[in-house]
Image (cartoon, rainbow, N blue to C red):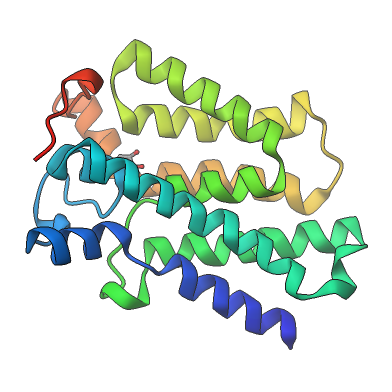
Length: 209
Ligand code: G3P
């Protein structure tokens, strides 16, 4: 019962629509009507500039990180490694679902990447750092944030299953699910990349409004 309650709490935390609220309260616009139409950090960079993009990225990431830390509200679970990790996955996924389908913003949220990163950072920091490495490398080579997110998420189960050889079955399934989830949320980006119309990120040329 307590587990279910903190999972709901994690969903509500993930539902905080950072980019939507920033755009609404500071710029009097809805970020979902501009740029790619996505309620996420990348589109905030694109539409509102690097300062707000960074802010949204950090808050969205913290939602995933804090969600997995909610496990510490249940001290009887913490000592059991498997039970703790499994509940942390549940909490993190609830936050990611909240980010994608936020109750506070008509269930139209972002693609979940920053919140997923916070989740993975909280559960297995080393693999999250490896994924950041893949993300930055692809970003450097292609300037597509979306492709970088997709390839970093595909690299994640490879790190978990092959390199770190994690033996928690639930975590292995979760790692594969992350890759599938990111591919699913990036379908429009994939079709734009294939058509050659996906916007590239001139990272050093962002203008702050
Ligand atoms: O995490 C979202 C990013 O990968 C793509 O965002 O705005 O280019 O669709 P966007």
